[in-house]
Amino acid sequence: MRILEFGYMQRALVACTVVCAVAPLAGTFVVQRRQSLVGDGLGHVAFAGVGLAFLVGISPLAGALALTLMAAGVLVRLQRGGLAGDLSLALIFYGGIALGYLFAQRSGAGLNTLLGFLFGSPLNLQWPTVAAIIGLSAATLVVLLALYGPLVSLAFDEQAARVSGVPADGLVLALTVIVGLIVVGGMNAIGLLLIAAMMIVPVAAASQVARSYRATMGIASGIGASSALVGLTVAFHADYTPGASIVLVAIGCYILAAAARQLRRRRRPLTAATA
Amino acid sequence: MRAPALEYDQVTFGYGRIPVLREASLRLLEGEFVAVIGANGSGKSTLMRLGLGLLKPSHGTVRLFGEPLNRFQDWGKVGYVPQRASAASTVPVSVEEVVRTGLAGDLGLLRRPSASHRQRMEHVLDVMGLAAIRKEPVGHLSGGQQQRSLIARALVTAPRLLVLDEPTTGVDADARGVLRESLEHLVHVEGVAVAYISHDPEGFAGLADRVVELRAGRVVVCEDPTAHGHSHEMDARAPSASGERPPS
Image (cartoon, rainbow over all chains, first blue to last red):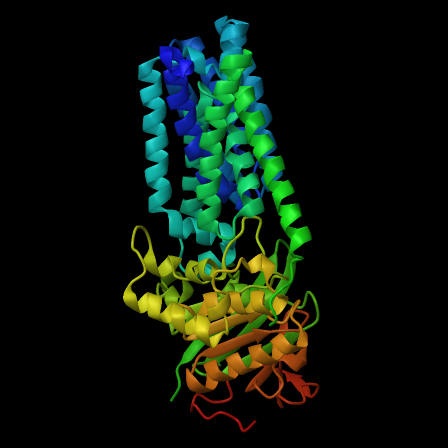
């Protein structure tokens, strides 16, 4: 495979595949809680973090991580304080993009540099950044595995989870922080505006064909990783932008899965088992 | 002598300035079946949410198994079936997975279900008639099967108190029959205390030891469980703590 002969493609393949395999695992809980836009909201705050990093002269990854984690805490506090989910997200969303643009303009960061963070530039990754991406993804995976049972309970029915003694407030915060880690982890590879799609679209596709929560997570993770591999390959051969190609392949998977579900329904009409 | 499972003592609650419950007192004994009825907005669900610690009263005290709610830790003793028309979810979830979510509080982090947990899961799947469809996604099941999945989840920790909020919503007549049988088994064989919230008396007729009605945030006791139209406003503590069940 010619694609593997190039070091920049090797690095892009590793980083994108890892991020796109882990993102849907957290996305399953986010989709279930009907908070599909939370990744988008935090992505905009991460953009503010990148702008701030340029302004004060620190690593963009560190700037994005600091502001995103802070925003995750603020978001949970706003929602706990009674502000409707979409309204609190909108505040974070618009505040992030406004601050990001302000910081970036003040720091004099070039448009191409900023576009690289917004839409990803996996072909420019160096091994230390790839290692950081793998580290963030691994941390996310470990936390998700540790919290799997309580998170399923919370996502399925928050009230019943609270009554059964699940520490729901802490878990909501943990899930929001995990989403923040994935956003920052995927920033360089997929882009701040596109990484949220890799949390949601593979889950939407897997939900069409899976019959259990665990299967949905497994299939979604597989779709995420495959989309990264196929998307990057297509981008390499057709000279397309990598982040957009990956997301479009994932959307293609959703269309195929939805069509497969429709076909299955036509062949075998859905009948509820008798009570 | 039976101990109280759930006690409300002069509980008052409101959403903002809108009062929902006013000085409500109620006692549910272990092994007792109490039906809570009332019109929409009368405060039935609020009463139960206060009892489960999902809301905090502005005045008064709520106790679970003798402990004030802020000190109560043994949540495995409490099972809750919230009001919802369906157990279907955005992400496919199997019956088995729904039931296992009931163990999350008991297991905490990293602990896997023990042999006794698995045994209990088998038991509730069996009792609720779900064993054969345990791998099915709940969204593919009938309303009755979905509701039984939620009840099985509430029972998986072997609770001593079961709170059901409008459990027959979206459930057909056959499934209501199965639900009745299951509740009879729980109360009479397993000795579970049941708080059953409903606006439909058919669901608990012949099962309830007492019927409590909420009217404009006040607790009104119906003296005769089979004819709850005859009632008077009063403190709705249990008639006696002697453990005697009225004849049904």
